[in-house]
Every structure is written in C-alpha cells, then in structure tokens.
Length: 241
Image 1 (cartoon, rainbow, N blue to C red):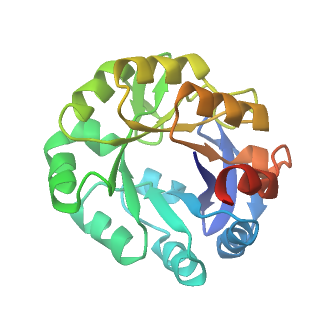
Image 2: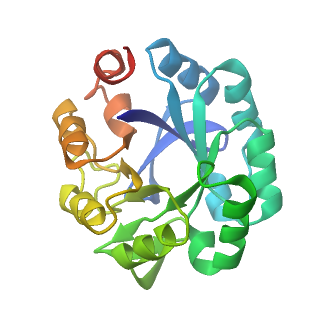
C-alpha cells in the first residue's frame, strides 16, 4: 500500500487544518521543502501536496514550493488545490508533480475534467471525491452538493477514472480514526479502483485496517506531525522491500 505523507501549504508554510476549517489552522513548519526532504530521508517515496491558498483563489498560488520540492527530492508528488484550468494543470506538471487531483472541477465542469483525463491519461489524473454525510463537498469543502459520493465515483470510474482520493470531511484533522465504512462501501461498489484513503488516520492500526479493506494508498498528515505515527516504522513495513 502506498503511504503518502501530506503537506498542506498556506502562505508558503506547512500547515494542517481541522475539518477543512481555515480558522483552525496550525503551522507546523515554515519550510515545506525541508519537511519533504525529511519525509524522503525517513524512507518515504510519495508525497500528497495541497495548495490551500490555491483552493481559495481558484488557481495555483504556491507553484514555487512545488518546484522546490520536486527539485530537492525524488518524491512522487500528487498535487491538488486550485486546479480550475488547463493552464493550471500544465503549471503543476511543469513544476514536477506526477499526478494532479481534480475535485471541484470534476463536479463543476466535467467536460474539462475529462479533457484532462484524455490528454494526460488515467494514471496522471485523480478524482478527488470528498464528502460529508455521503454527499460531495467542493471548493475547499465550503460548498456542499446534492451529489451522492458513491454514485459520483461509480459514474466517473465508468468513464475511465482509475485513481480516487476520498476524504470524509468530518474525520479530517481530528485524529479520531478514518471513515472505514465509507471506504468499504466505495470498494464494494467500485472494487477495481485505486482508492486512496484520506482523513482521520491516527495509528498504525488504522493503516493496517485500511490495507485490509482494500485501499491502495493512504494519506497521512496530522498523525505524522503530532508524532502518533512514525514514518520510519511505516517505511519499514510498507516501503522498504
């Protein structure tokens, strides 16, 4: 299973939010590039990178941080936040990311999302499907929709999407455990997707249970920064072979 430690960026700094609430921001490091280098030094091969400023501005803001991390490490980077145009996606790939996530755009402009899928391929484009009470939320989780999470994923995987990142917003940043039932339901309905769990991961046992459910990857943020999960232990179990 892929372990993807997370870096969220606001004003060039490494932060974490709780439930996506910008007023509940905690700054963990002033230099995301150094954080990424530490992740790599502890055995990580992947990185989940989010431009929270971009999510609010509706365009990439912190592209220089992306470039800095890509140039300073060999991490495989998936990136999201503010991707609302093809020009933004081009900036992201040109800055060194390996995958981008389209969440709000997949809901608001599915034709554009599928243009990206056709142009860059299913290995490069991830569907971001985040939800509260099984209904999709977009635009930095500030807009709730009437779209059912499971139906959205079914529709998009039926049209060629292979990679999905899904977050239960009520779990994000709370260190109370992931939404196991949600991931079980997703995989029951769409068993062949590459599902990456995100939100609430707190312990090694959480990671092991997500693996047992069938998740292909897991994004871990606050539990790393707060010391609940040790990256070297994760690397020994899931990365080092």
